[in-house]
Length: 293
Image (cartoon, rainbow, N blue to C red; front, side, top):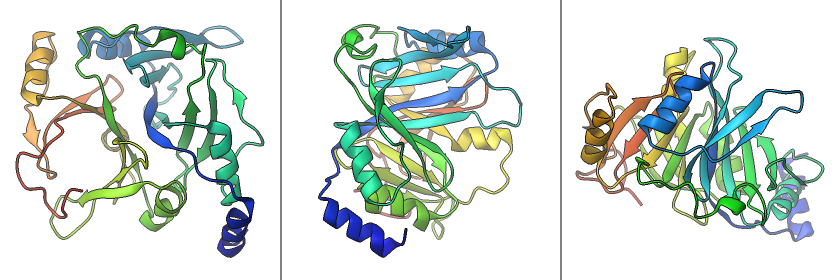
């Protein structure tokens, strides 16, 4: 389908994009579930409210709850040290069926229909231009998630909000055609290791404050580098306080630092090398490269 015919179809269909309100979850693979549980459960303090089993037996995935609308999903399916640890990223929408229809009207390849998942929610998956699996979720009454609203939110949580997820992007223009032009994400900041280059672009969801971070200029990454790029960020009021809490739980971690965006941050790594970043909400010095919107 050409860009022109896609645009004409969208105009004629009258399908409007429903709200996309934030990051719903990130799905990660592990080959050591016990170690993952120690990191996300004991060290970061998130509770594990429920799991899903494979129809053929064994564990399909387990959930670590950040808040009522955000989770870290861990799949015990990593089979190789060189395999990408990222399973998928997910965003919450107000209407999954309408969003599927809207994306179809814009020429995006989508499933034929949206069906309830085994967790009781409505969701569907697409692939972005870089081949990343991107899920859209609508929380439904009676689902595993909705039935546990207000539960499993202990004070031990190092954070109560996943503020962004990051994925590698080879072609920014191609990514923008999906995330910006079709889905309505908007740039809030871009920066790089040097002032004259762009390595990261923060793209905020259209009806919320969370964002997707484009990780640019990544070539033939090692598993460690890919784990740095495919990451999640947890908002905290004080990185220093978070560092002290985690150190008190026995974690051996690097010192906090001020990033190029002017914010205090602390980089942690799960047992399979995925980066989990703690970040303060407000810059303490002027960000490099571009104004922060």
